[in-house]
Length: 310
Image (cartoon, rainbow, N blue to C red; front, side, top):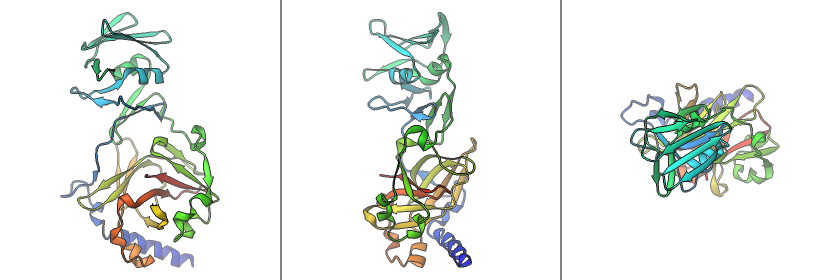
C-alpha cells in the first residue's frame, strides 16, 4: 500500500507540472515568473514587523528608504522631539542624540556634524528620515531584503509561534475545508493559522529551522501561480485550501529560486491536471488564485499549519 501511495505522489508531481511547465525553466525565458504587484516596503525591528498606517516607508530619488521618524524611532526605544519653527527633529536614546534638519544632508550626532547622502523631508505632515542613517546612529544594525522589500533592524532571530502569542485552534475549526482529503489532517490534533502580519515565523518542526517569510501571487504570463519565500527544507508539497469548503488541492513545487542570502522562493501552479487525473475534478481549469483561502504546509508537527491568504 505504501508503494502505491508513493507511486501516486510521483504521478501527481508529474501531472502538476503539465499546465505550469514553463515555470521549470529559468526566469530569463520569454515569459518570466513575475510577482503580481509591488509590495510595500516593510520595516522589521528584531524580526517583527512594525505597524505603519497612514505614513508608509518609501524609496526616494536617491534610492534610500525613508521612514516616518516617530514610529520607527519610538519602535527602537528612542524619544522624538519636533521643532516646527526650525524644521528640526531630535532623536534621543540612552546617551545618543541625533539631530536632523529638513532638506539638509548633514546631521548632528552627539554634538558632531555628520554628512549623509540624502535629505530628511516633511511629506504630508509627516517627518521622514533616512532609515539606515538613523538606525545606525542609534547603534542598530540594518539589512535590506530585496526579495521581500523588507528592512531588518536589530536582531534577525525569527520567533516561533509561541514566542509571539500565536495560538492553536481546534482541528474541528478547519476540517470543514478538507472534506475531500481526510488523509491530510488525520495525523494532526490541532491547527495553527498565520496571517501575513505574523511573518516571518519559524514553523514548529522537530529537526532544524524552517522559516516562512511571505506568500504571494506570482504569475507567468496568463498562468496563475503562488510564490513562497522561505528557508529550510519544508516544501515537499503544499495544499491549496479553497474557500466555501470546496476542498483541497495538493501541489508540488515546479521551480525553486535560490537567493544570495540563502533563502529560497518556491513556485507552485494554481491549476494542475492532477486534480482531474486523481480526484476526477472535471472543471479543474476553472480554479483561480482568488478562490484560495489558506495555504497548507506539511511539517512533522502535530499541528496543521495554515497560511492565511484572505
